[in-house]
Figure 1 (tube, rainbow, N blue to C red):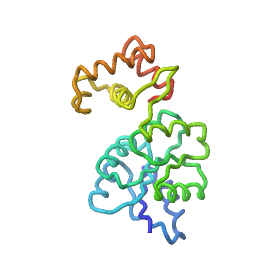
Figure 2: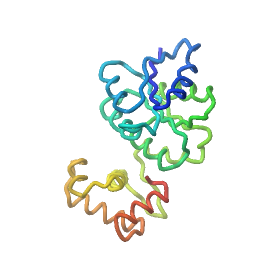
Figure 3: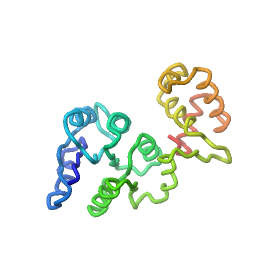
Length: 211
């Protein structure tokens, strides 16, 4: 039996997702949530195999929730739910540990197929987003190609933390590396993305789908 948890802040959509599994014998909806804090509270006391996780939720959004769940409950398989097929959302969720990415208007059959796939240890991306499949390289920790240059996994980590507004000292503490190392990574990122400052770095990274 696959223990499924569904998180979405819209009750109508939540009810719709729940109804998908009414007649399935091997998938049981064990709980629901309207925000990330409720997700974490449920996981602290209950066993869950798969989470269908809405990206845009109040209080604690799906991106940050995904990051926290992946770190604290690595055995839980996360499938992102979104209304958007933007690369920035997709790549960030994948980087933070999601094993799948679905659009909310995907067919019922595809949602069920995605749950089976990630439970078996695979990855699943909405059929509407096949052009983004190459970005699944994030899951394997591979380097990211960029105009003939390569961003290392560590540079990608630093880039994401820079985009969140963290200082080099804060990033160093978070990644358990030296301030000098972070500063070097930042300089390399500026060169590789041909950016003059941090604001331009983040802007260009978003334009290229790196954030």
